[in-house]
Image 1 (cartoon, helix red, strand yellow):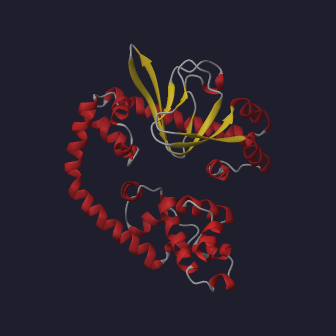
Image 2 (cartoon, one colour; image 1 turned 45 degrees about the horizontal axis):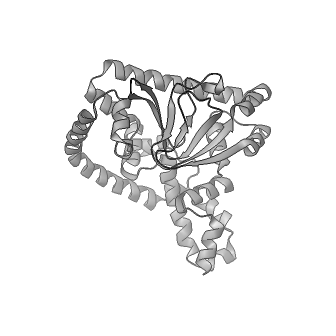
Image 3 (spheres, rainbow, N blue to C red; image 1 turned 60 degrees about the vertical axis):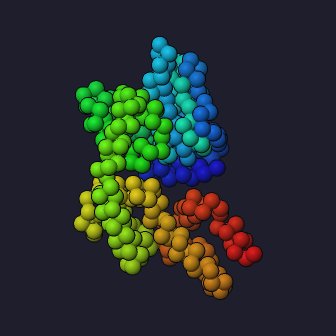
Amino acid sequence: MDVLQIIRMLSSIYPMSEGLKQEFYKNIRSIELQKNDILLKQGEICHYMYFIKKGALMGYSAHNGKKITTYISVENEFVSSITGLHGVSPSKETVVAVEHSVLLAMHNDVMQQLFTVYFDFNFIFRVMVEKYYRDAQERSYIIRIGNARERYMYFAQTMPGYMERLPEESVASLLNIKAVTLARLKKQFAAAAKPQASEDEEKCRQLDHHIRSRQLYRNKKISLTSLSAELGIGRHRLSSLINNYYHLTFSDYINSFRINRIKEQLKDTRVLQRHTIEMLANDAGFASRSAFYSAFKKETGISPKEYLQRLAK
């Protein structure tokens, strides 16, 4: 259970105290859902705040026999009942997994206790709520005033890669357009995107070569902003390239270079006679042991220890 993933994300908002970190380790549980599994039914009390480690969830309300999608959330986002936040009232939406998902959950009672003890938790949660409010306001704005094409473009730009991944009927409901309209727009944009896809592929080859040849990934302070400035590519454009072409976040993209370097080094059995694997991780650009172990398991599906054991065989 990768609680560290949540801690790192929340600490980027505001530094978490050691006491609060330990509370997270003690009080978070893991939940696994298969596609179409229901996490919460309309009318039930939502007792938890969920963090999506893997997968995607959809919230919808039923009205006159029709499903009205209210949100779709994916990896590295927090989810709870919007209408029944903190379990104060029954939820007005059903929450269902739209693909195989792994969640980390904290009970509302625990959260309320932590609010009374830790200022950092109050501050972090306030920032999270503010961000959600801004996102929800923008989403409702585009749905109210934009036409179908504008809504489609908004979703494609703000959630790159997910148009193909998520069920069409759910996306259509979220954007308040008919499924047949969504299918038509997808075909139109796919045809228009072919020349762009070829250009993006070439740009990504150049990007890979630039990072690999200069070993930029070894710089622990590399960021999307610094790399976009070095390449002369807009920050949003660079992020879109990486998200759409590799289906990776910038952090995961850079970590893939680091991990590949380490895996190449480990092919030489003499390397670990002179260096520890933590030394190799540091040299490859990882800022901490925990960041390396988390990224390695995310990339390979196994821990560094298990990987070494397999190499030994």
